[in-house]
Image (cartoon, rainbow, N blue to C red; front, side, top):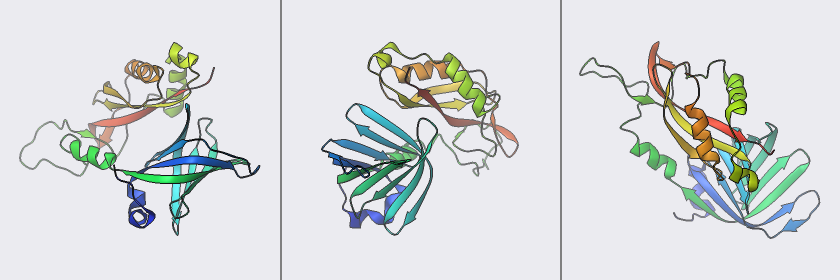
Length: 245
């Protein structure tokens, strides 16, 4: 990975993932500060703040750019709406939840290319919904990442949250180490609604990733996805929250 100064990155920031390294943060309201090493990951859907063994996961709800500052509306693990801002020009990252606001002073910025590389590696197996087979009429077994009608857990998102809360077990190691947060699991919803190729996309440790995979594999059949009124195989991401006990 290469480190990029501000002048090299502003044009491409929205299309990349970034890792921000900070050795000092300040409480804006109290004016207190701390020299604590932190790492902030920003990608297309998630901001993760790592501070020692503490991890804060923020799902991006919306984002916008004003001059050279990027503003994010994010959702924390309590489903509360918060605000974040990243200014590569000022080398600062701000996080605000209610009256609580922290500013991280950025030492360096690392630009990641993993999402682009992954899309190239999987291009052969993942197809866009506009692709057609003009050479022969055969069964479409491609795996799609989007669809006209996306697959759905029976009963919808709320039903899935309830099912997960009843079937996911807090791993002893995670409980001992007081690990909390979101694990992301990917799976392919087959044409019959069954789930295959269940894998951890983002883990938080303590056995939480393994437990999330175990639970997702036990899920009932989903309502499969459709493209142009035809049932297709579609890849989905399931978020499994491990709350404090």
